[in-house]
Image (cartoon, rainbow, N blue to C red; front, side):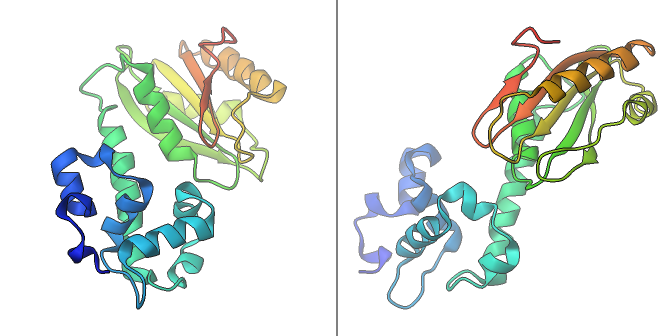
Length: 224
């Protein structure tokens, strides 16, 4: 049965308009982006099949473009729509970190950093640079590593902080393993960077470790 033949309250678009976006399942949200199915499958059926085939919504959205575009019913046009939706989500979170306002809610930074770093299959070390009122100046991805390591150079971090005239920084890096638990190496490099930045009077506010579904704050754990 075509989706247009369903009761209005069960159709994904009408359901979103009537009950809001949070009322929809992953399958229903994905179906709205797909818009159409393929022969023998509605958009809902196709969305359910895709999520099952790739092992969940997150795994689906992290899939290499070439592989996803080859899947029946997807193609380049629908992949572009999905990629654009992901970027819109990141920019929505980024808008909460604009320099016009002080960063008063740590959750905003954590949500943004998680969105930015969680999709990588290698380790990435990044920094949020802040002014003396804790307003965001810039976000920079500074170092890239293999699947489980990134070489972080204190001198480069100091140079970038001075270039942005930052008064404070928040570090962040992802764990491609998906586990957000900080390692001894993470603690060691954080202390090294703290010492280097203290020489130029730049404060380290936090170091966020990003996993698949969670983040860990060293500041909240008292490890800074």
